Image 1 (tube, rainbow, N blue to C red):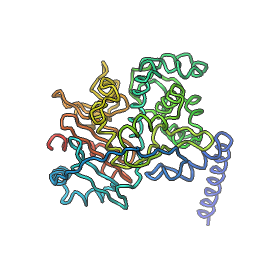
Image 2 (image 1 turned 90 degrees about the vertical axis):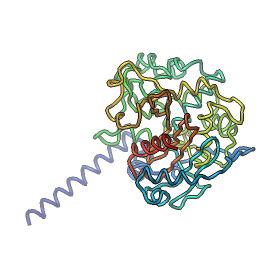
Image 3 (image 1 turned 90 degrees about the horizontal axis):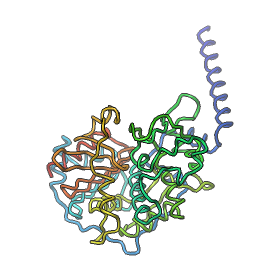
Image 4 (image 1 turned 180 degrees about the vertical axis):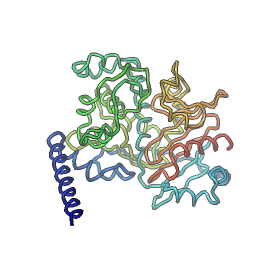
Length: 400
């Protein structure tokens, strides 16, 4: 009887605490944000159905890949994964789409788990590599002077919060080494940076007002989702158009994308792109982006983005002291890993290197210049762990 009363009292106390915490949250944050965090909880691969969006339109002159399927792709991947059947393996690993392109020709293309060629898949942090590329275009077009520009040149209001923002450059944002604080989750209410950069309905406001400087720029890598939001505002202010509109003209149209796409926005009122994640499209069009970067900014023989930018954004580089610059988790990635301009890199040590755009739930555009190879995987979830996919792609590129 006493135990029952004690349990009832505990339940009542917890309920009161939850109601109190919810009340405080509603005082501190917009109701829309509180609802999203509590109702939507962790992001999933169908977030594109939840958010408002800016549309992307298929190219007026779509250019499909030529197709010459190669059965060796399935055989080699199955062998490397220790699977009897590669297609079955991908199904079980919650894959939606898997595309392999070599020399600009589709060698393998399959869809799984109720997904077809024209099904929308999301990018998650693969979007960051698109943001990096748009910065390259904006520099080429003269809207931005250099990656060495201080971000306060374009976001002067940051100086009013802390004059040390003047030390942070665009390059620091691209390399995830700004010295800005970023803690994915905090124990107090809903103030973790991960939910804030995912669900807050005014990303301009939260990205300008929330980040605090805790270190010197360029000293330490720290993955930070405020960075693409700040870059998005720089793009918006310098080009005079939305990031989606700039993406449409510089990439979607030029690359001959076959399908429509979209870029999720934070809310109808704010109408600002979720620069950290919300780019949505079809797997084969994501492969076109990978091919464009593999071709050093060329499209059908025409140079539309500086090859020097592509090299600078993707090629191997290391800080003076990699051990203190990168976290210990970096050692779990294949090759000699590095992080360039929002591209994950894998130096092979023989003068060649691979690099990848990578996103939550196992979204990848993996590029091997030496093998003229692009691998695209989209998924409902990872299935196998994040680094195991990268290792699998790395081994495939080594042997194919």
